[in-house]
Amino acid sequence: MRIEIGIQEQDRKAIAQGLSSLLADTYTLYLKTHNFHWNVTGPMFQTLHLMFETQYNELALAVDQIAERIRALGHPAPGTYAEYTRLSSIKETPGVPKAEAMIRELVEGQEAVVRTARTVFPLVDRVNDESTADLLTQRMQTHEKTAWMLRSLLDA
Image (cartoon, rainbow, N blue to C red; front, side):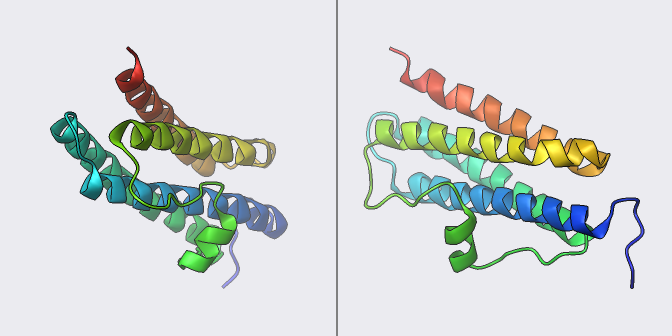
């Protein structure tokens, strides 16, 4: 059935492509955060273990919201590791880094998601896609705040 939401098909497709990159970044950051939650050690174990758990749970909800927005725009959401590897600006971390390196990598990941979200905004603004703009704004606020909290752990 034809989608008539006031956004042309070519614009919906371009927005869905941008959101697919955001989904890939978010899922990759989710996986990295979950991995670090399982494997963190050291004097900050309890703090980081709980913090990472809160973060990966939030990311899991975000993945669903982003994928559902892509579907509402009439396009399939990517859902394989191969697609995420190709679309994501966040790379996997080999091995198990020390706790401080984990924090630094998660800051970089949070900031990468914000940058990806920002790349979608010009088109979303141009075509008056307020629903996607709202989603992007919420995601950016969350990732900017999380990056700040993680950075705060690194201040001496």
